[in-house]
Length: 208
Image (cartoon, rainbow, N blue to C red):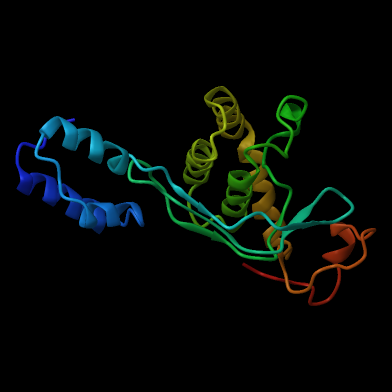
């Protein structure tokens, strides 16, 4: 990283971070006097210039009897300064199987793990298909980094979805064409209810 040789350069860098929306971290740039030592300035700014993505919203979920879940509250993910991808809001009521991991990998990568939060974001992107599949997969990869999933596990899951995720993407396309909807308008109150049964109810769900 190039040293910031003058006070003006440090202030300009701080303005850049503010413009990019680094949140509460950028308040420190306004409140504190910039360092006069260029090396110290580098150490101070480096964490801001490489801030992780933002995850928001604790997971509050319900479950159907047939291993399908739904969000009780919305969750969000947005990219950090060194990450690419769209900001994503997954609405309350979204129905998910937690991870679009091909079944063949389930013995070593269960659908519920430390990567559950980004897996739901990924599942949502695979359903709405507003962005290319590659974008959904890289958001998943960044999200796992933000949730501190080990690099080995994250790399394995990313490889799995890149290799086998195409079938899940195509299946979602087919299901939407056949009229399936995955945003609950009302929530089940009977623990024996399956998703297969619930989605047949008139007016139970809405399109996303």
